[in-house]
Length: 424
Ligand code: MEV
Image (cartoon, rainbow, N blue to C red; front, side, top):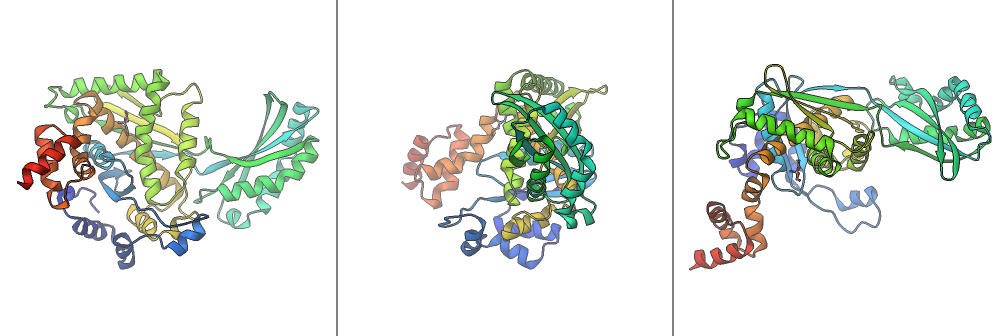
């Protein structure tokens, strides 16, 4: 399968859907789901509460991705113009040198059990650690299926926290959740262990819940970009200048939380869009990403440096909590089709793909920011939305948008004038 689809953006929606279906070998039902209405309201009523309808997003495909030697089409659902184009552009640049390489530490989630009113917190810590084997066994009794599949609780760690409500003994269960996101599995284990932790610590257990700072479930991606691919003729910048400016942008984000917030937001544009398209819990990944970025003072999740050959070496590292089994994906037929398009076989593979998408998104965003700025490209793609917002009749939307781009005047007031001119 080739993830390069020349002229894809110029095709109409039906042609694009067919091109993706052909490449991804989608079943007829999946193709019908993508072209259909999506989530049935009856089904929606079981997904959430007090449901009154369903909400649609565009489902798009980012092209050009090669990840660990394999081409992939990336489904993305997002309301922001130019994110999908940027991801595809970032992937196109990375592709020249083989695409992205990923590495994932393994699907380990952490559950926390908080004990308060512990008289001797450090001695209690030791008692919990001494009971590790029993605690692991008890945790694993909660999920024999997970254990059967090679997962389960593998480690117990204990931290004593000094809080403004006194010391707390916090037990962490480190659980290999295999291909699940794992929230339910680890929460059940934490709840089941609470009485044991109370008797070991002599305290009272209060919270028993997973930590979204999933620093035992880290995904990394990297790629190398030769400088000639970065040149921007319009901005009269050669490749090495753009390369150096991207490295400067990376250093800026690392040094300044104000910039890091926006830089990381750009990364999450891509990751959240794939997570939304596949009906997964993007808030968990967001929480984990920003908490991880803040571990040593809030900083960038990615890195840019110039390697010995003068290429731009790009990398990213963040926790990714995602699964390929369980979760809500199968409740939403379009999300099921999106998973078929993505074609990942395991949670680890999925996490690696998300890290690569985040890096592609970030790289393309920085390349635009350090050269012509993002507004030109963004507003050109956004011109049709501006025309529609200005009340342009649908048969004139394309013409009005085109004229506004030509004139570099992408504004509602100009759209209104153009409607008058073109209607005369
Ligand atoms: C816009 O949604 C994202 C960017 O602002 C990210 C960045 O500044 O790096 C372009």
